Length: 399
Image (cartoon, rainbow, N blue to C red; front, side):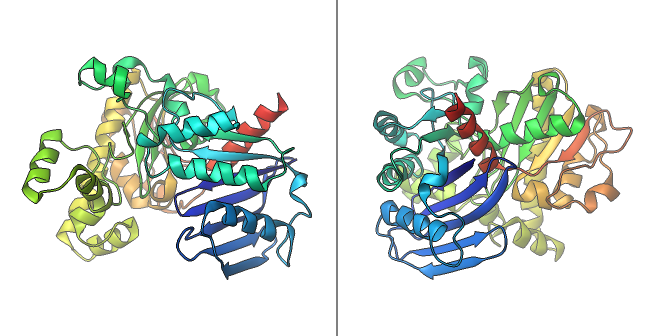
């Protein structure tokens, strides 16, 4: 059975076609620069590739190109889109409206679009892509939406509420939502399997570290707290995002620079984080290279990230009254042994002892990197959000 997984942004349409009989990827690609000039890249599992500049005025033209590259030409993998059993879409913000994977209808798309105020960069783009996909795909092919925020709907009120007047929650829906939920759910389940345990019996701190980073406390397979908040801006230092900042510092800087709210949001989301502190760039690899050469601001950037992750691991261990495992995933989490080592060093108070030799050689593969005498296991667990979306979609249509 074939499932097409779609991850649409405001100017991009990433996709994977999976054979769920063995969960293999048949093809994947990206329709990029939608609304600008357009470009498609497409690659099959057996190594065939296709790329071209294309006209993508809207998401509809991008979906039409997706259909074309999957079904025709030298890099085709199917003859007709009717061979696809279903389409699964990643949606960033489901708020309190969506707590589980849901079949797509016109009403569901409208509701996702209505939530765009909570995720202005993402949700309207998701709605555009969903409408475009409905135009292009055969009506007989069901579609499902999987929400990044759904996993975090198990957080207790004491964890997701802010100290603002309660009316702001009731009327404006201002609260912690959390993000990366699809990733955190996938890696926590994969970790439990690797440990030979039931996820319901584990207390896990999941560290999804990349250009955007979030730490989640997972108790018994459920999210009980997470670092990202009302938006993905909160939490630890990220590529271009500030992470947590005193709100008074925000209003102070805003006044001094004469920023509008939109300009201040841009400042904190696009010009801060690694980029703003280091002055080198937003990519951990560039910052690490500069730190290795003695760049003081680059060193500071890395120290800030490591320190903040340590604090959250300790805080979440306290919140869960215990800790069985810490896992690292995402671009940095899977491929930066130095970050993992620095985070897990001097953490014996929590029973964490990293195996520096084993850890040094791990890049993007499932592996335990803690010592045999470590009371808390430390693992690298590659994430696969597309596979989880495909699994959720298959489970839903199978009902």
